[in-house]
Amino acid sequence: MAITFEPLHPTFVAECKGVDFSKVPLSDEDLQTIKDGIAKYGVLIFRKTGLDNERHIAFGRQLGPLDDVTPYNALGRKNRLAPHDELFDVSNLDENGNLAPATGTRAIFGKANALFHTDSSFNARRAGLSLLLAHEVPPNDVYGQIGNTEFADSRTAYADLPEETKEKIKDFVVDHTQLHSRRRGAPNEPLVWEDRFDPAKGPISKHTLVQTHERSGRPTMYVGAHCYRIEGLPLEEGQAIIDDLLKFSSQPKYVYSASWKQPGDLIMWDNTAVQHRAVQGPVDGKFRRDMRRVTVHDDSKLCRGLNGDDANWRVGLP
Ligand code: OGA
Ligand code: MN
Image 1 (cartoon, rainbow, N blue to C red):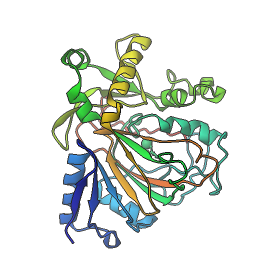
Image 2 (image 1 turned 90 degrees about the horizontal axis):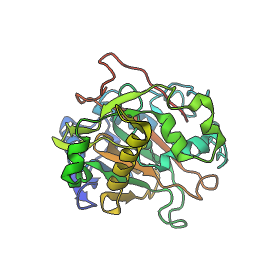
Image 3 (image 1 turned 120 degrees about the vertical axis):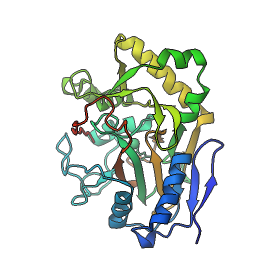
Image 4 (image 1 turned 30 degrees about the horizontal axis):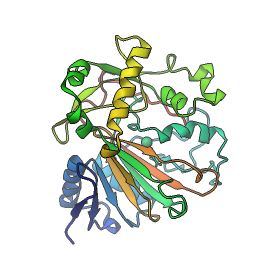
């Protein structure tokens, strides 16, 4: 069966049909078709893949080296999905697989996921493709778009920026840290304001703001919630510019809201071309949402930004 792409938005996102995921590893030809599709669309939705943990990981490996989660994260939480250390647990479940309380540590740190972001931009080597697979989905007929994942088209938003903005931001270098997005995501939670979570004291990853997206050759801006400050500018001034860019790039015309219809649905996105966020709400603490992510390291020339060719550290909160 031929692989086809059905565009779901005027500028990005397509549903990809005709991939036989019972046959992973896929053929070189099918893989190349998918690579061409993700380069163009930035987000691909595959329905009812039937993938399990092993084939999910194997498919990811075909696309490049994977970011392996450590069995324990920085807060000492055991990865529920161990020994599959290639799977990021993006569920609302605790480490025993029970529904986590909506007020617990995991939920507090997880609130930042509701902000548009690019995965792992805070690590020495950033994420390229993310492959998120649904294992359990909340009933999306109860709360509408809550439980969806939304995407924002950074390439098109960049192209639409006023010329004077493009000129102003063209040489900016941005410091990324996950601690910043944790504070932005849950500003009323004392936990995130503890000194040990001060973004100014944690590891910083540096990336140019304006970049060429290598897979498509199109210019883009690499922005998201982990952007903490612009080098050479006072903190507040840099953050105001970042906030303006986040606001501009997440206007409804640049956003696509993807629903999860059933277990087995897979969404793949390119973190170097699009931003994404979870649409949170009453499902947390109420309905199980078990999503697992395979993360492929970026393999473009910009994968380590200005962090140095040997930089390999990674940080990780829940
Ligand atoms: C992720 C993520 C959003 C969601 O997996 O990186 O941000 O809707 N997920 O769960
Ligand atoms: Mn994410």
